[in-house]
Structure formats: C-alpha cells, structure tokens
Length: 356
Image (cartoon, rainbow, N blue to C red; front, top):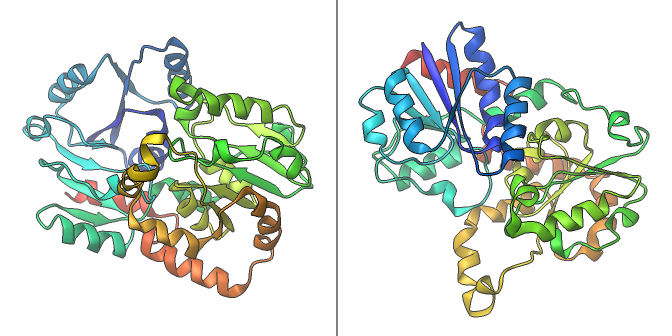
C-alpha cells in the first residue's frame, strides 16, 4: 500500500512521523510532499529535516503541482493536516484522511470543509461526539493523538540538558507560546532572571521565528537567549515533543501544547494574558472569542491559570507540589480531550488505513 503525507508546514511533521514509522514497520510505501517557499533559508531547513528523518519526498512548487503529483501517484491514502481544494478530484484516485497537528482550543478545530475528506482522525470521545453532532454526514475515528506516542514511550526522546548548555541539576521550565494570541510580548523583560533557579527552554511557534509579522517576538526571544539558564529552540527544532520529555513544568497560552503537556501527566501553567491587536480589543473583542473555542475552559481544569506575569514564580513553585486531586482531575479531562494516552495512537491510525 502507498501512503502520502502532505506537509504544508514543517510543524505538521511531528504528528505524521509516528504514523510513518508504524507504516514502514508494516511494509508499506510512505512518501511526503513538501512545498517550496520564497524563503531560501526556510527551504534549506526543510531539506535538512528531510535528510535527517530520511523521508522519501517530493518538493512541490505549489498546490497545483502537488495535486498533479497526487493524481499521478494514485496512492491508497493521502493524509493532510489542513483542508485543501479539489478534494473531489483527488477522490477519483485516492482516499484522504485529515490529521490535525494540534488539539487546542481554537475554533477552527471544529470547522469542516463543504467537501470533506474520506475520514478524519480525532482525539477522544468528547471531541468525537461533538464533531459527529456538528457534522453528522462526515466520518470521524477516535485514535488518540499520535504526536504524543514518542514522549509516552520515552522520557527524553534524545534531548540532553547538558548538550543544550543547561544545568541537569535544576528543574526545567518549558515556555511554548503560540504566535497569536500570544502571551510572549506580555512577559517581563527580565524573565530569565526571574526564573534563574530553573533552566528555561524557549520553544516558540514556528511563525514567531520566521514571519516578519511577528518580528517583535523574535527580538524578545533573542534577548532572553543571552541568559545562561536559557536555551532558545531554532526553527530546525520543529518538534516540541522531545523538549516536553525533559521539562518539569510547561508555560503556554492559547495553544494545544497545554493539552499535550498535561497528557504526559506533568504540571502546566496557562498564561491567560495576551497581547491583542487593536482589531481584537474593545468593541472588536468578539473576534477573539470567535477565534478561541469554548474548549479553552478546560485549560484551567488541566493546569494552573495565571492572569498576570506577577503570579508566575509562585505558581511554578506551587505546581511542582501539586496534589493527587489535581493529578486525578487532569487525567479525567485529558481522557476527554486527547483520548487514550497509551503510546499506541499511531498504531490505531495504521490499523484503520490498512483495513479500509
């Protein structure tokens, strides 16, 4: 059987790779489609990742060229991380599946295109039932979240604190803000000094590092990088999962990373303060509410909520001493939102693909 993964953005890859590994074990042919960009340095990074992961790959100039490739290949399955045009044309030669790269609270999670894919893999009974209720004519399968499989199967996934220039005798804080709405610009300028008793790994969203629109993010991050207790992930560090493996506590905002880290049974702090554009404030605040789904309410149930950076240090200390009741509550909510956290999600995806 031939399966192709469509990689519109590099950060889709961590969700795909565990499935790729299981498909290869089962003897199937696996290919990836990447897209060239106008940024030569980004293209070089993508090529470096392709080489490192030993991916059989086709580089497309644009969607039109990728579509022609799909029609020519006639794969059994093509797996996407986003909605695409002309899906009905693809269905003339191949089945399609959607695997989203995040399990966060953004409203787009529950949106479905008018012409859906053959199947969409989802995480947990709660989201399965909600999607079925909203889109009764579409096909959904609860597999759990394959991206987390490697972290569940291993504690560090190859990351060594000493190799990052950090102190292995210190507790490690992972700060993983999303690009928008983000808490990054609200953080104190002296954040590394505030957290001097800890290692601080900065893992910003891909867009914060590469898009001119978020150049303020990059400036802040590079200033923090100068501190001895800080490691700033590069664009090539596209996968958050290995860094979650070595972290003791994670900080994030309106990001699916909160659910991901909580699913590893570790304390996570929800930074519920954001730098909003003027078009999302005041009389336009409804736009923020439209962008963020009601699932954001579950952040407080799986983690520790703070509404100001002044609460950060005390909350970190408290989170490292969390009670059994907090741990049990987190596990209950994660079961709803991430499904089975057993390291076997990729196997369930592969079982469905091979049996259908």
